[in-house]
Image 1 (cartoon, helix red, strand yellow):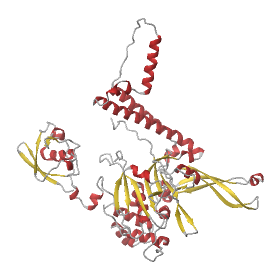
Image 2: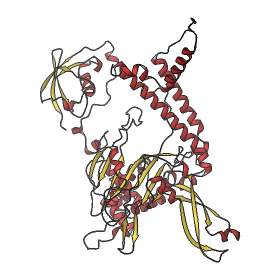
Image 3: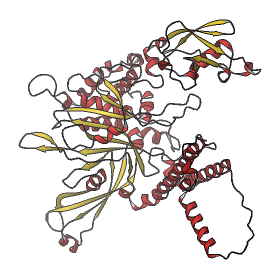
Image 4: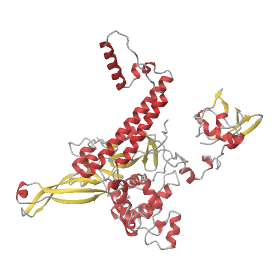
Length: 581
């Protein structure tokens, strides 16, 4: 949106100002402060017969080019002590394409469909939503990259020209190129590398026109497998020696969990003959949600996936027999991948047919019940404490909103008995009953000390702060040292790959990624999220509400969740000052 030139009159002087319609009134006042020296809080700007407010949307004021605005106000005596912005304000139209793409609130880049490549595009968008992966890729250099020509090409995002088999390097370059544009980007170099490394993705369509559609889950698994082999983490805190740091894979640290499994023969005869269950430990990179006629929710599918039947030879029976393998999670990764097993191979059609059944999934996933007993003992106290803190914070926020309504005169009833807390009502009812049972004699009333709202707020804030400190004390030291593990047992949904159609070899794939909160320019921390999601439909990127995610449970050929990416719910941060206060 183009800027609008206006003229601001102040104390007999005229100031020409470019108004950015995408900003608010507070930003406009900062512009005037740099010109007049009048602090924003001392400015009075007249627009449309009223005073400009800090939260006013400049695009809705109906400003016209060269329109004259009146400003009143004088600088305070401390005006010289106010620090002016170190950098000159830069408008969107003055930014380069890369600067605009990296600005706060910018729409992320989509990926062009190069002929049935939506399976790859949706997979890449979910992987790109992992900040730690992007950071680690920026430090990646292939072990055999001694050639200066390859290093020079990588500076321009073209190292794939010299290393067509290096999938990790191609992914690094692609993510860098995507970060510098808001347009649909053609992932040609990465696609060529993927097809070179895994020829299955280079299969031609049966009709002879173009390439065949592929399974997004297979693309996900192959890319993750390559990253596990190539992307090693360096400078690991707590590593005992250089070799340990060199060998740890990014995937093993952040996206791999561990199973502890027991396998036992189903036939009683094997047990009677002395066959003992076998114990094993396995690494996993995703949890499978098996879908049957009885599966309605993700939890049921995960439970089914952790118990499987295997036919193998029994030495004591001297023949093949059925065994049941039961697995429990011994390590939870920070990023948990969940795969809905929706495609089933049908011999009659020679295709992977889609299981259409609706299976719901939560925005917050509790996986403690699937863990080993040892891990449960570590996670349950932490998980329960987090929920207690959340409830207390919700109660505080509810009380604040009620007080604001009372002050605004919008909730008179709430200020009487209707606004009291349940425990307060119960206490008053008890006192009333006791009063009825006493005699009519005069009694001496004790002095009652009433607390102010500020005192009550301070007590509540102190209580929450103490609870957060207690929470950190509940975390096991070994679990706390594992930076890439889940320390709470809870996960929040961050990404979804969907499939639309009747089979894996046809239809269309898209992906949804939850928007991050805006970054504070001072602290660098992320602020509260607005709950919106980005929908990546190849090169088309749009913003959708969280309600849209709830429609992805399946039940037909429409968009159905195929892969979910969950991120560990972090330990509550401790801030001495309540930001909401």
